[in-house]
Length: 135
Image (cartoon, rainbow, N blue to C red; front, side):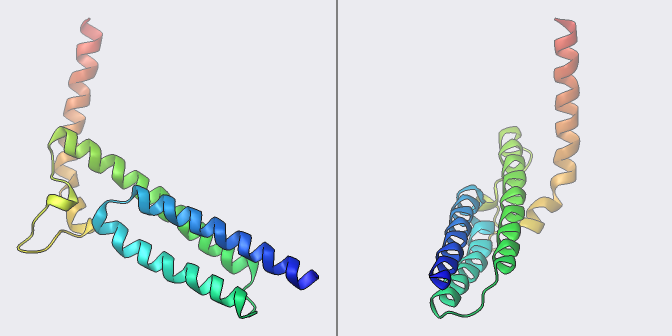
């Protein structure tokens, strides 16, 4: 009975991991999403296989995976917000549209142009603040 309880407990953790993975994939820019979700799916499959083959997959291992997933989710949200803002301000093109000679840009290549757009953003925000003060 105790073994069955432990198995259910681990399966619950695996489900939480899968849920987190769905959230990650929903928020990721396409190019980034494909890479990270593949890694997360492999990890998730390994967790489930280990549970069903009665291998010792410790709860701490699963919690580490969840922590990694949460960090990925936060990073993706952070990046997506900036991608959307940059797209709205027309500072840089979105990843999906950034064509670097027959291939999409990586996230690193995409954000290499961020410093210029950051200057433009700062200028826009400063103008907006001045406009509000003058009203």
